[in-house]
Image (cartoon, rainbow, N blue to C red; front, side):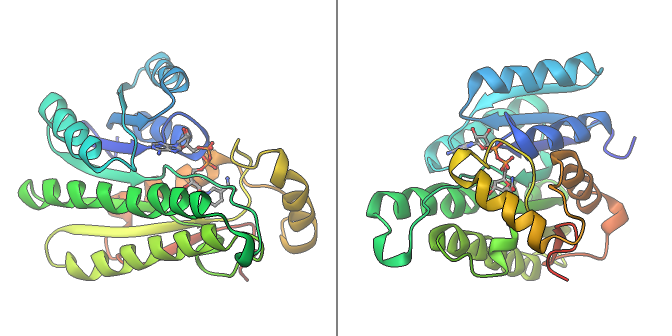
Length: 248
Ligand SMILES: NC(=O)c1ccc[n+]([C@@H]2O[C@H](COP(=O)([O-])OP(=O)(O)OC[C@H]3O[C@@H](n4cnc5c(N)ncnc54)[C@H](O)[C@@H]3O)[C@@H](O)[C@H]2O)c1
């Protein structure tokens, strides 16, 4: 198994892409540190992994809380050993409004979770990896990190920032045994596409996605696992679009 006994941290592991990724990594032999703020669904992820014969533990960790991120990662390392693989996936959607109508609290929450959350996690993961022989990180950005997303500027700005962090860290640690990459999913069928955005995404998929369908969380997880693995050993500071051809 490609990740045999390697410790893998996944944020936002209670649902959608994070859950699918946690399962995929465990199927490939990783010991999964599954973190989220949704304890009940986190427990479901763990039991899915355990029923499959894998190993995982749930840790409650709000990525927007830097003290909690530091404490949780230290605890996980003390429980299972150094983190070698990390997936910074936790994120929120929403904040749909034209720029002049975006509310302070929506902007602040978007930045706190989708930008600061990724940064706080990367900082601890990289520190750990630098002291324990390197590792591999994948951040979850979005097609909205490559393009404008009219009507959802805060989300687009946040996902652009995730790519900035990915590219910069990719350069910084390229000779130090740490690869940092990102994925840019298109429309993926997960709970984040809630009622407010469902209709918009349906239209977008029909008119702009050459494959004319939503992606599945497992299809994103497959690419994340590949990027984390040695199969992607010459990739760093880059991103892979998982979008049914949208960006083409
Ligand atoms: N689904 C899509 O179409 C799509 C497209 C592009 C990018 N993404 C990105 O993929 C990532 C995962 O989204 P998803 O589609 O699986 O959605 P999801 O809502 O199913 O999962 C998101 C998870 O993040 C967790 N989370 C939210 N705030 C958190 C916080 N402060 N701390 C820790 N965990 C928190 C949630 O509890 C949830 O389990 C997000 O970063 C999202 O922006 C999704």
